[in-house]
Image 1: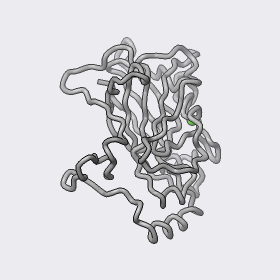
Image 2: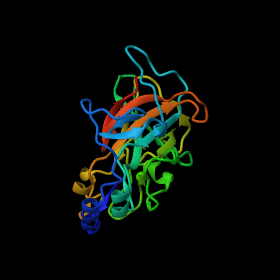
Image 3: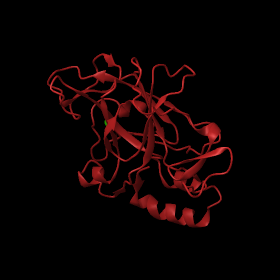
Length: 249
Ligand SMILES: [Ca+2]
């Protein structure tokens, strides 16, 4: 969610007058009721959560996983929806880094143009009817959000599903230049991901208007060989705001 200041007053007014739709707060010491799990500090029904399985100990990611799923974990409720047209975590770009022959991590890929889609949350999960930043394609390609542009996607309680494509030219060594138009690349153990979520650093760098309240927001990252299969995706973790060095086990 990116809150313009002009929406903030409306948000506060609604938030103060309507708490009935809020999700329950939870923590390790304040568990959710049966049938719900705690995500990002709020209870969500197990049936609404796309499950993924963590890898334990020395286990490594199996070869062939090309699909990356970024699932919103920013809490949404009716008050939030009334206050923003950019609901949930906001994804600008994804970068894939792989060690070269000297062990130095190099950017090799970003979101592959044409691969991205958005999966709506399960029925009962709150999500907003208004999302003017709903184009999954804006999360592929280079990190390109600047000023008033609409070069990012708001997850709106759902999941952004995409593949990573190699930078098509050897000169494309930066997150701002890599186009991802090369071949789709499978993730492998030892890779690292950077995910660019619109947060207050974007404002500090002038990539979002100064009037924007851009809190860092929560999202879950997982990978899968075939998103149409019933196999559980492998969890890479829960992250908040722009995050670097997401390790692929
Ligand atoms: Ca973008």
